[in-house]
Image 1 (cartoon, one colour):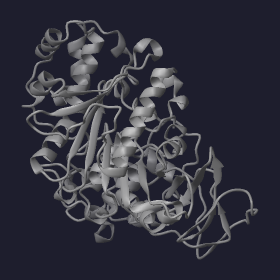
Image 2 (cartoon, helix red, strand yellow):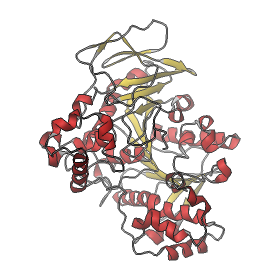
Image 3 (cartoon, one colour):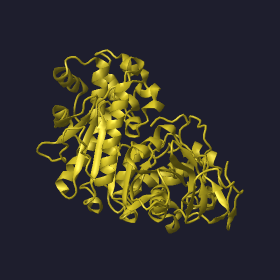
Image 4 (cartoon, one colour):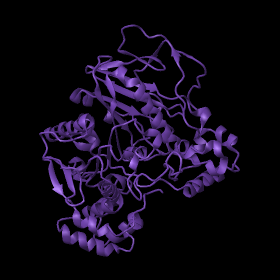
Length: 519
């Protein structure tokens, strides 16, 4: 998702004493750490900024701990802190290492209902982002499907994924994956507390977009996460492999060098102000590490993780992913000529072409899609080579594995905003999934078509969360993915099921060895 975005925060020790809250201000819930009070929004109980873990400022690069208990009633009417962001763009939200908090939206408390629980994991790769956004507000989804929605914030970038095991010793062997351990702790919180919020701890779906989808894929291969969720949905986010320990160690040594810290001097690294630490990491990739312990094997390489074999999955991409990933940062991609196209492809996706010549690839696309403009061809080619390949490989490896069904989708609806330049870009499906198109006119425009598609897609996501089967009467029969027919649900103004959509594109890039970006 796109985000406009020295130690700030309070370190609590012992039992926290909080200001009292008046008796009738809003709904109250009792968690394992204490009582919280939220607000009512459109008849939905909303609790924001609930701590699921302790302040990480004094435990940099170490696994998280549960929150300390507090006395009195804790205010949960406003969002909590977000993790420090690697993006140079300023965020209007408070960035702090005290960021292990989550938001809960529920139709009712303590009513004995066993509602499906939908746990949202935000995008922004592994370096930026938050669940504290109106676009992923859970009120409409709760009302539409009688579900409980949870959004998680957790450690990111250098704070969540700096692998120090090789340079700072065994105590820090988990450091490359503590951001993932935050998510595990949050899911453990859900297991222990969600009944209070009317949810079913035995029916939990994790879903996420972009980096959030990749985190879902990573969780599917982590032993520590097993049993904490029962369905998985990934949107435009695949994670075939983690980083190797060697590659992750190289990054850690670069960070230490930028800070003039000798390897092994962990105390100095833990004392450094967070702003200086962030500055030392600009332009670097951070993500989960296949460390042989917390992440014993790559999630989808060379096979799909057996740990998630019996968990139903929904996976999909948007038709024009790179219109949001590349187009936003390189506006010249919207006004290309055919003569400029080969160089532009080399600039952005050379590493995904292998032995293919850009000129030959362009010729194929002009043959297959004679109405495409050079910009249309650019976004189609870069999406197929860079973003779509991961989905294809994951779906194939799930099919080869057998086990629970996998449902594949493609979001084709094209936004009319800005003369249609956004196409079906990366992030475009999010407001439809949450039934929040009213909050996104700058992204999707406004109209009856948008609202109808939002109602349909949110119903599909709710159906899958409830039963593990996404079929509803408003869509054609959605067949689980198989290698023979490759059935794929196309979400557009009128949904349709296609077999092997864009098959020629798939076959063109199939021989090229795919390397997970950043790893």
